[in-house]
Image 1 (cartoon, rainbow, N blue to C red):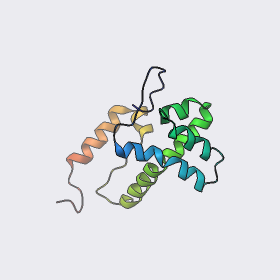
Image 2 (cartoon, rainbow, N blue to C red; image 1 turned 180 degrees about the vertical axis):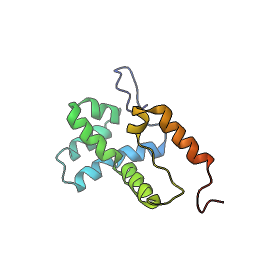
Image 3 (cartoon, rainbow, N blue to C red; image 1 turned 90 degrees about the vertical axis):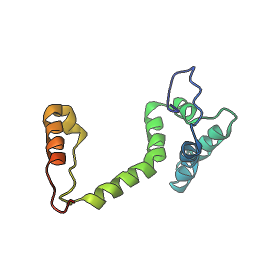
Image 4 (cartoon, rainbow, N blue to C red; image 1 turned 60 degrees about the vertical axis):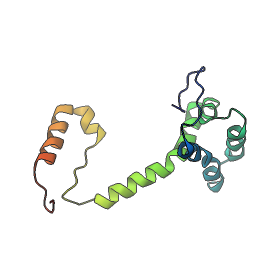
Length: 122
């Protein structure tokens, strides 16, 4: 919702977690020595400042780079979760590329995995 790029969208954050998620971006940029840190902080501090407006005020490449800084904690958590289950026989990893390439076969694989008892499962 807050990434909605429609000009008429008023994209205030839904809750405190979402707000904190966006408000932490300038500090992440600053720690990385990114030249946009002060500008992003100023934009977010304005009365109607929003992440949507910050992204909309930049070209696609710059907006994508800023979005990567916003998403960094989520990506780090995904990597930590993937590493935690690596090699675990009770875990099946499906790639989106597999789903896109052959949805039926990939879903059959997932259902087969879920229907079959796994070593170490209870």
